[in-house]
Image 1 (cartoon, rainbow, N blue to C red):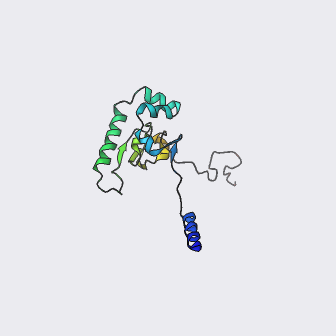
Image 2 (cartoon, helix red, strand yellow):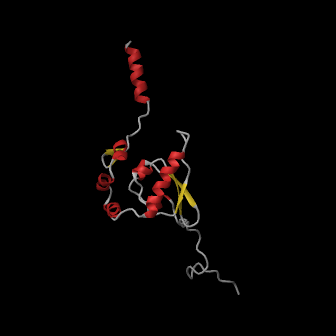
Image 3 (tube, rainbow, N blue to C red):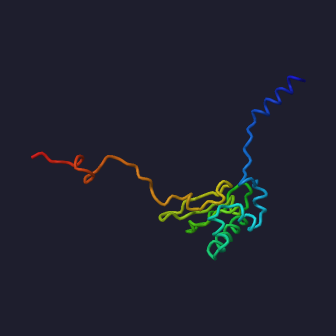
Length: 152
């Protein structure tokens, strides 16, 4: 019996345990149940200012469309349809978790799946609007030493 119990304990230790997500000390379940005023006290000052000034028509329309896409989802394991938006300055709220948003970066819509870690961040942070510069060899006009000088 002792050997069997030791084997079970070892199996339990081997089993992978995931870290429970918390946002500023609040777990995900209670975060989803928070009222907008309670949530406002937990976010950063910039987001708090934005929420106190009120959500205008376009951000509210985006949240409505996300709700509609989640409702229309039939498969419980699948992802909802992508909702395209130009609102890069939208702050991620707990209600958006699990949604798929197409964030416009000036050229194409970048598909972003909203995860709990994204709460309080802007949508623009997940859709790069520029291509990072990969510095290669210096070209013509960079400096006098690297310029091509033809032989006479």
